[in-house]
Image (cartoon, rainbow, N blue to C red; front, side):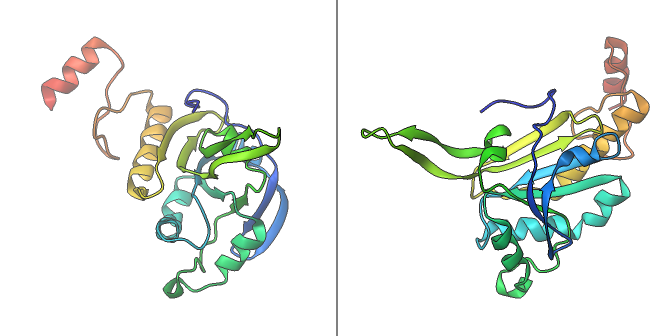
Length: 210
């Protein structure tokens, strides 16, 4: 699994469901370059258990991401039709009705592979036929991408482990603080805390105060 931090986010074009109902073709994160930060996150499968809790948790904080100028985009290896069908099912019945941010359909599995979160790989059997080795679905990968299209932060969780949306917002705040002030963010930094200059003197001053 390659680490993408410090590198350009892989480019792709795929079908997606936007605004909870409209299927569009040729969706790409490239549309946000130069305009927005992006939180791009993968989840394993539609119609499962931990996944809807995450999708609804991100939706609940969508306004906070938007207030920071951040675009939120989800992705799994299911089809766009599967995404659309799940979006029509009420939350109290296990569905994700009400989720408005785009959900990308990585049916070719190439997006998950490019981002290094595809669980499994392809191999050849004894007859020379291409077969899948593993579930071929995405781990819970999350990527914070800056306006230049560079990955600044990533996490990857195994299937049973849901993510913290608040921690994602904290990382957004840390990135934007660094970009705006030029200072770095020490351990457990949260919005409103002091940063520090990237120097021995800055570290010493910060530690003396904390």
